[in-house]
Length: 532
Ligand SMILES: Cc1cc2nc3c(=O)[nH]c(=O)nc-3n(C[C@H](O)[C@H](O)[C@H](O)COP(=O)(O)OP(=O)(O)OC[C@H]3O[C@@H](n4cnc5c(N)ncnc54)[C@H](O)[C@@H]3O)c2cc1C
Image 1 (cartoon, rainbow, N blue to C red):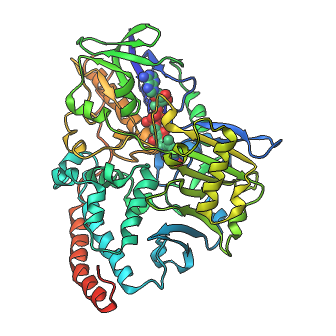
Image 2: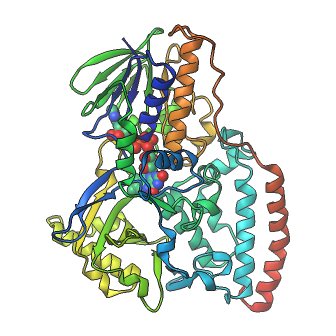
Image 3: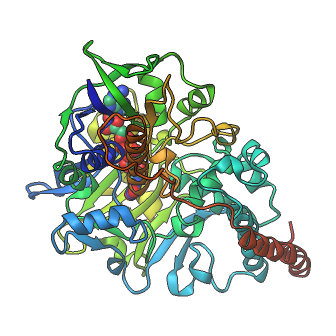
């Protein structure tokens, strides 16, 4: 009998196993991973960035971290040598530019000429547009500040917010079309989902659990895209996991979990092997749990709903060039591009070069329509040509047509992840999740679920995976001590989910701002002839 079995070897599972081992040195811990490597959505690979060059470590999945993501930032500082954790922002130059497709035209916004640093909004934009962006943001922030990140179903008006899609909220606003498109491309760029498939409550919760939308969308200083690591976030995971003392079995997909007994949980892997454990944590994406594991007896209906949710459609492509021509494109230093919410090839692109010049690259999230548009017998060369054409479109520069190397990974084809960056929740799911969200199941509550999707801090990021792993480990340690599984000394204190409740005062201030701005925008729009 194992004391703890962890299903899934991503950042969540590895964190959970390490924390249990640290707190309970005598515990027998088994980690079962379906694929042939640990890391899950943190997947670094070594590739030459131009023919004949030494291989560089790069990421198919998670790539960035921010200094406000305290767990992963501290881990990188602890495990990496000096210089291996690097700040990307100085590389973007003193006055970086962003190219975006909004309201049918490509716009380049240079930071020094942008209004409040908002990509796509210039200082000399019409007054009506500038007032409207404040109005739209005020309403959004009034709602975001209502969110209870620990218990989203306790957010005021949770039912209404969860019945509404993000797209419906965007459409109902009386603002210029390009502001609506900005919201849509924010959703597409951040979670690789179209806003019509996402509940407004989910979107508000996801952003609130990551210090707010303005933080999530920040690609520069103090944002979650500021830092990268030399060995990749997958490489960092390998170093982190090296401290595991328990048994790790790769190529061991779990296909069945029987949680009917009061004393233990029985697990079966694809090769028919079974084992019993006092406590089991399922640390896989909700969608992968629903697709690959049969639970006996069936799980709570609210959990089944979580397990049926879609994943984002992210496919990631990195194109390597002999020089960073985009740093002098059309007289601007481009560091990022977005093709708008209706993108059909590249959705967004960032400069992912190494600051020391060892490789120059642009990385894109690629829309599924690019792959669908290829002939059924298309070979790798045809795929690379299509990616290069997509890159030329989004950068507006034909130099993109000639990459030296191309790396591409389609997360929907990764069977035990199923998409990326995350599973996202449709309307009507999160407001009903109270009975199961971060709660164990089973006859005696011995079956736990964790993952970046359940994180109440850093949701959807590696930070969230670590937060979820920490919390589920603390839950299991507390329950094991409480039920006498171990000859524990004193009972540890009951774990508390990180996160925060509604921030009603902030919400009220933004609501008042919105109420004041609404008539002002009408007046400005009336006099400037731009009212819609
Ligand atoms: C393209 C992309 C870009 C991203 N960019 C960033 C970024 O820049 N920064 C950031 O912080 N985050 C980013 N993310 C998100 C981040 O990678 C994830 O939130 C995080 O890695 C999730 O960790 P996890 O352990 O919860 O899940 P996973 O990493 O999915 O790990 C789950 C593991 O469980 C295994 N598994 C599944 N089913 C079974 C089974 N039946 N039996 C046994 N094992 C099973 C899987 O193989 C996998 O290894 C990105 C994700 C993607 C896909």
